[in-house]
Image 1 (cartoon, rainbow, N blue to C red):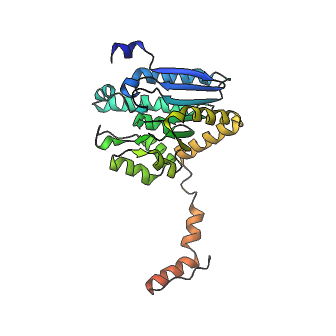
Image 2 (image 1 turned 135 degrees about the horizontal axis):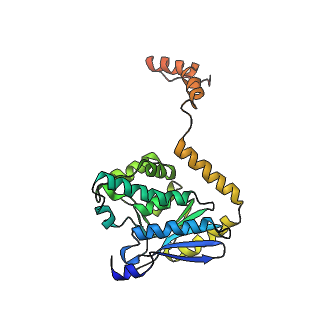
Length: 267
């Protein structure tokens, strides 16, 4: 960590009306997450949780020579997690931040430009709304870079944001996705030019501040509970029974054995 890095807050904050902006502030290293930034974020989120005048939060990265939301975690921290105990502790610390974002009582917006990799992509996945600049590069190239893996909770977040297939492809290809790839699966709301991202994020956040706060909060909490706790093991018993015990299934089996096309009756 350079002396400049030590002297400068790793998180910048600004307020625009009822919208609080949290800006990752390590542009020299493409806003890579540090332990200090993580602590500053957790502290800021705790303050926001107690401030009734904040109605929405925007996360974004400070622009350097090139735009970057967050280029993953600080490699120094990763190198210190060589043993299993340290690795689990590192994941739990990262999880503390993500959960703090998910548990905010106000809606959150990720304004992503440039690199949004690793921990940055996970942070964005925890937000309610994501918008992207055309320069966005999103993903987890860990299979060709760090050689680590994600936690179960983080796989669940990515699946909720995209799909199981896309999550698998991101990891197995070790390639980064563009804004249009994410737009195609509705993982982001819109794509704008790099010079438009801040204005668009403010517009989206302001629109959220005009909606019923409890409706937004309750919806987020309900979706989180469904994602994290799933549904009872027998919740689909009626669906399975309806299909497996149907005349249509018997017809399908007979048609398969008779090498003909089944005639569906819906019974």
